[in-house]
Image (cartoon, rainbow, N blue to C red; front, side, top):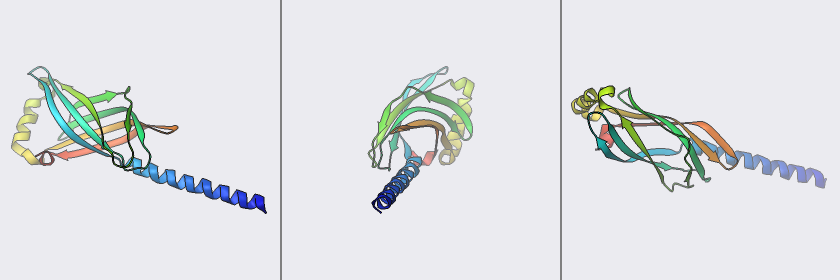
Length: 160
C-alpha cells in the first residue's frame, strides 16, 4: 500500500512539473521584443550604419539565455539587411525585467535603392511597415532551442 501511495505521489509530482514547464515554455514563446533606440553611426552615399537597440521582456518565471540570432529587416516588404550573431550570451531575466541587445545594421544605400525607400517613407509616412523577422537560439536550463521564431512588425506611426 505504501508503495502505491509513493508511486501515485511521484506521478503527481512528475505531472505537476511537466505542466508547469509546459506553461513556462508557452510564455517563453510569447516573449516581447521592441525597438528601444536607433542611432545613426555612419551616413554616406556608399555606406550607412545604424545601431539598433532592441529590448526583450520575458513574462515567464524562468530566465533564459539568448545565444544567437538571425534577423531579416525589411521596409514595406523590401529586404534591406540581414543581421546575424551566433556568439552572444545575454541572460534575459524572468518576470518582465527588460534586457537589451545592440546590433549594427550596415547597408549600401545605392545597392538597396534607399533613395526609393526614403521617398516612399516621405510619401506614405505613417503607413510604412518595418518588419524584423528571423530566428533566435535560446538556452533555458538544460535545454537549448534553436530556430526559435521572432517576428516584430512596426508602422512608422509607432515611432512618432
